[in-house]
Length: 147
Image (tube, rainbow, N blue to C red):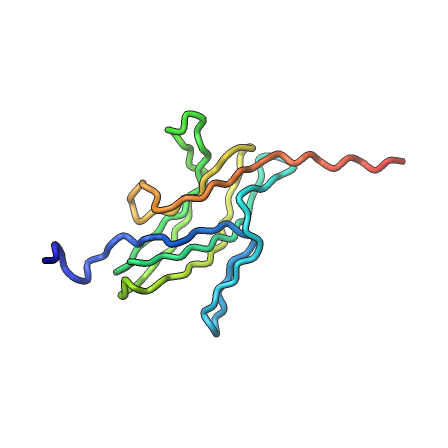
């Protein structure tokens, strides 16, 4: 016996979340293209602005959901992460068996080197459905050419 209406919204279940250079979806075929996956990057100075491709696949989604994608800096005590930037994306599905690919571009400031997490959240729920670690390092400036 069901505890609620058959068409009630339910939290989607993430199948994948990848960080990459670019994620796109072909309008004609619906196929997704993922270029250059990574879990670390570097900048020559901070604060730095980053541009990430993000590829997400959701399933078990029924109804409309306002998903949140947020970048947080990991706290050293692993308790009090600091949110850096957040973006939203609307997801609609009437069929919970459908896999929903979501290719995105995400931009945000990186205040300093360290460990960050890109988290996917459903609506106002603060518990991430899935997260990916991003290690950000200081890249030394190139040495000047010898004369």
